[in-house]
Image (tube, rainbow, N blue to C red; front, side, top):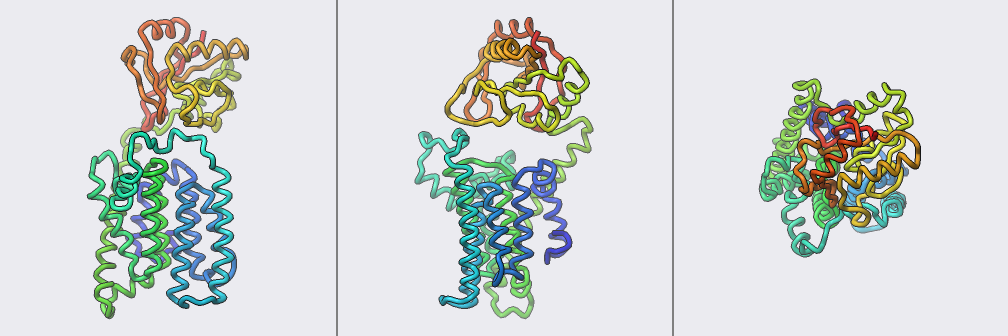
Length: 419
């Protein structure tokens, strides 16, 4: 992007050092970062390949299979492509429209593959619980106030800013694309469908909202020549010129906030050399240093603490709430939703008897900080609790190997070995 985009260097630098691109999509290395890479490739390919070939359709096929938000943006880009052609040729069949139809079919196939992959979803606990909200009110709120959904994360949920303050900024980002009406329509459509998804289907975070943001950046990339022309002093369309300038102010605000968040996030690591995002690597080093733990089975509370361990150690992991070996956690409304310290100890004994190997227990909750019999929420719909007797019994039957310092996420824990 730094070398190929048409943006001014200041804006390019601002995008590079935005929190989602600088940290979430690079350090965290999630599939959402792949979405942005494909979006940038689409931005580069579209002006050259719009009217012939299958490159853009193939890229949209891939985009649709990065994540659900990417799937929505693939559909939104098809809308841009279609309206862009109609703006140029009018409502009539042309060779360009025929090429679009072929690429749209490829994209539709990608969306179908995505649907077959993720449906029916097993992470139903992450979906909206309709027993507590009104679908109609949620729909209206998402359309009129998208800043109240997960898109708020682009600015920061911890700031406790009202969605009504953020929504105008999000709408302004789309208004900046007015010189290319197809891009404006597509960006606005993408904003609404993203808000609807977050509100009606599943909540998300900054890395999810960032896909829509960089979808808009992709449209800005493609439409930058039209935007620059509209802003020129010789522009006769003053209404478009003014709306574009106002819209760009929203983009500047959003990029600036993202830069501040990026600096704060990265600055924390420089300020505290011992601060990490996860303790999985540290646990891997600990186990690798102990030959007696080479074949140990690892169990954790909550279960999702074991998911990243396979990248560091070959040890088997056990999922307590699903009562099976594995490392892929399913957030379901079924299964064992409530667990206790006694459950963890009992299950660990069963595993040790069955395997004959040592059992390592990871506890996110520190025993000396647990309030007896208090129910602690975990994940989407799990709870954990421990009584005084359970805490004492656990201490009598385990040995504390180490207590890792806190991490920036919840991936830190005390490490115990079952006697």
